[in-house]
Length: 539
Image (cartoon, rainbow, N blue to C red):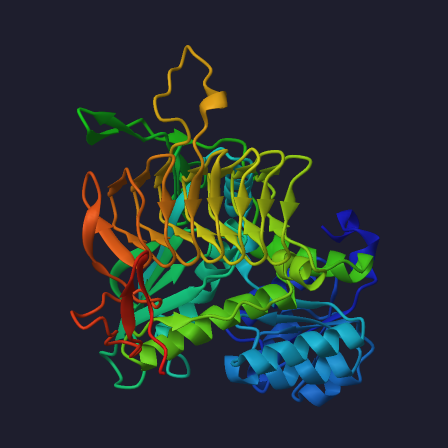
């Protein structure tokens, strides 16, 4: 087998630290790839067995011997609490490092490893195995090319009876792979995380956890893991508006990836599912994911390229794990995440630019403010201007010649047509509707009859609401979900119904005001004015 190996692998010396149940698989693959030179483990009997199996390798009991060995790379497959210290020492010793998941136990430790790797010009790779699984690689390609349409949500199950740990809970043991895949498919980090769990075998170690992820683009995700399950279940389900994909790693290879061309059609204003027969995705090469992952590490060393699962990718997963653990510790509290990993969108911000997903289309002649993010399948038409730090969700159409202020959030399936102006801080809920012509006809062009619509600062427009053209919505107004606005709305007014009618007053913070016009949440007091109400300042 070695005669067919690339010469770069033959000349790349690798040491493996940790030859336990999983470490032996890493030993096997690197040996078969011709790169293994040294194995380090604290168990002399294990080392003796490996020496018999692979007589060409050296063995040692102490990681200190690895640091001085004439090798290029180190593979670390030890307990998670040792990852940081071992990876740090190896990087400082000038070795390229592959570390099994998780990268470390804290965000600060992960950031330090990345810094050391960059300063020493070394490869830092994290063992998120399923990113190299040929089936997942094909699934990601299908998602990236739009075959599934707009992704609505993703969920995963990683369940089994056994592999029970005492050094880590089910979240840290099982969930990293699924979190890594979900982050890869969405191309973004969640803005909030919520996790719940159950401790049944040990009062301090969760045996079952469910983690919910909310992403800036509107995608939802959840990860269910357990080692107290009657049967093995390893599924990743991606639900798009064109097709749904199921990656089931327990199935035979030809059936691991199925596409379901289900659709939702509307009949008499009722959504009705139109089910399609599942399609097998053919021509996926049957290869061992771990072999591909090990080859990737060796190739990155040989070519000086960054891994798919580099330190930054490992840190993104680590941040979600730590936020999930924090939520578990707080009995399911929602944890807001500060996204600061310098991935594609963060690098854009650092360069005073905006970020647009690769499926988004931005016409020439548009102005996009720094820090603005434009997500999957959205289209900004010519002449439109979007302010700084806006978040434009999936399948949003803006323009032509539309002006949107700073810090606006437009959720999925919204069209902001010509004639509509949004001031700073406007929130548009999913699938709400703006019109720009009062009496449109498909057969007659009436663009010369566009009626301007102005939505003033801080307004919230609920899901599925309709704003009929020609109206002005005052500052910090609140349009209830499904409302149909046919006339001007005064500042801070809460309106609901069809047609929309005044139903109360709302504070700047979004809470409904009491009869005395004082907010029970933030304490702000208001007074009535000709244009609605206004904040009352102490005299």
